Image (cartoon, rainbow, N blue to C red; front, side):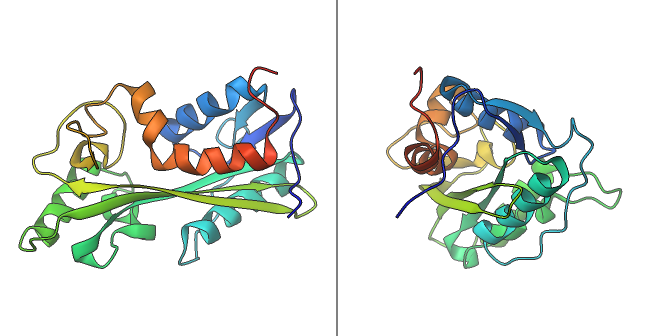
Length: 207
């Protein structure tokens, strides 16, 4: 399969208004010589996410940002899933954090997950990340990665964002919220998806 690739020095839009995601994705792209600007910096609107898959929602965001900016755009759609909740919150991960005033409170979201899943013995959980790279002409490249583990309560750690403090990855003693950010980046769901994206669409790091 032939993939369309970026070249060193290209400028792309990171199609997110989430500062935590922006930091992580920009840090992953930097060694490849890809310049980034966020959808938020460009004042681009956030499109409605209407798909039932991470790839589908990432494609909506990437396509909208590419068409609005005239630049290639990279969108991330990620979420936290709990086996006992049949994969929820999943693609509704951010919705579980939504507050009446329109803000998002992930401490409240984590509490909701705990209350919904606490009576089940199975604490298996995972983070999923879909990355979609879109060009203004409509061409799309999509990749998906996972990080497997289990949920813990109470949440632990002040690093990361979202549900990180309640997720302990397999074969690790620390939650994502306790890990050094560089270590989390190395083993995360986003890193797994990025490795696939990098191999297909990015110039070699440091070249």
